[in-house]
Image (cartoon, rainbow, N blue to C red):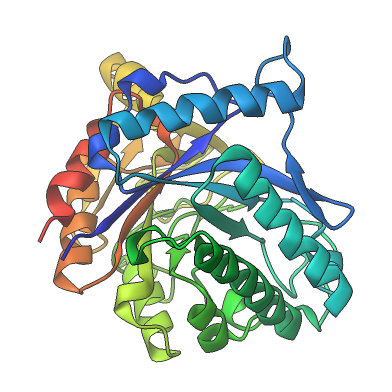
Length: 356
């Protein structure tokens, strides 16, 4: 089985596409486009010298060059992201769904994408301070069905081969809160696969030190989320293993004011921070101030400085996630996001361990 390895690319960050090992990826998601007045439009430019449109055109041309190294690579536009609004209104009526679906197709064709990845965080839920309605639950399904119809019709018009059909994927929350707001079996039926965001379990407003991307439940917090728990939740709710893409973070989450022993202890509220894996590997660990610990139950590392706690992934924990994907017959793995480890340490470890 050829497994998915999908990279998100935060296009507002500096990056070097020539160093990206395109031959090891199956999919790449350009993050993000946004929803304005019910239609998909380009996100703000990552280059202040270029207009949004010019930047998007230039970057998309560069992304297409990656296919010279890997002709099988699929490049998708990811629409939305945390606090991105506009979805609830776009999904509200048959007319708004039709407008949105047409704009998706037009965007894909204009910039030569192979499909679309919807990152609505989250239907029926306003935790990201976006508009939410109870009817989002049904409307999300109807929105996906409308997009699916348009993409399939276009694939047929272009007489695309089965391996080249336009793709529809979503980024999905990893807990019951997400399932409460969507019709999961119907949603899964419309998608080619689901990018399961199995990270941020301890997030930017956590007040205790905990793992943000643990593979299994930590002994100190047996009721907490884990990647394995999220996968089992999706399987129990009608999603087949071959549609689940396991998410991995290429960044760490920190909390200050954490007393000994570190893991599980209370910290200073609102002192949360983030570090890229690159910062952790090249600055924090070499400084000698941070001690690496390993949680054998959760199968993830953490750092502790005596005051600051950092939950993160390294090559050891990422490898275990790749092995989990293989052992449980999942579709593959994805990560957020490429610019946070341009050494490719984590990407390589993941790639080496998801192969069958």
